[in-house]
Image 1 (cartoon, one colour):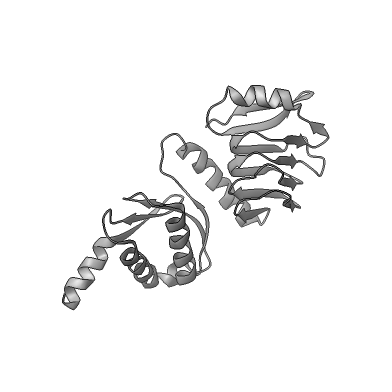
Image 2 (cartoon, rainbow, N blue to C red):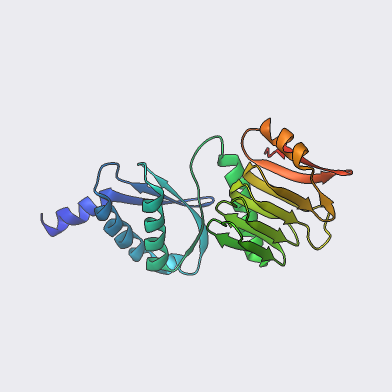
Length: 223
């Protein structure tokens, strides 16, 4: 395979396009994964100076990839161009509105340095605390706990405990893709476990917990 042919082949493997919320990385549907990794590294290397130090969301399109492959791709991109990938967006019509709203909030919080990101799943006995708002890019498993003085956003399943508004803010909220918490608290108010499970079981998709009057309610997160 000649040099020009190799270059054209590599260009077909990966295409990068910018979107309002980050980058869309189009992957060849049938190429071996190792070849894709090499092509991704080369493609981002060409544009390193434009991305260095940025925080953004990424979507992987064109083929189905495993969680392990996704993590490998993220690592290669971050190592190659020095960006921080704050979220991987699944381009699904049922979740796009939710992710769009979260990404906008993430970017705003990053600019103001008013929020914090945690990348990974919180496991049993792990406790994560924040002096402001916090966005968890993963699940909160049963036995784990998240505490924030302001809002909590979980881009995953909340099965453990969440305490928002720990600084006394009764307007704070808790958002999760899936909400089946062991304990839920906002400011000085604790949600009754039975009520949380009753309300959560009837709601499909992302949910938000907030104080309304003298109770914490769980509602669908809508646009």
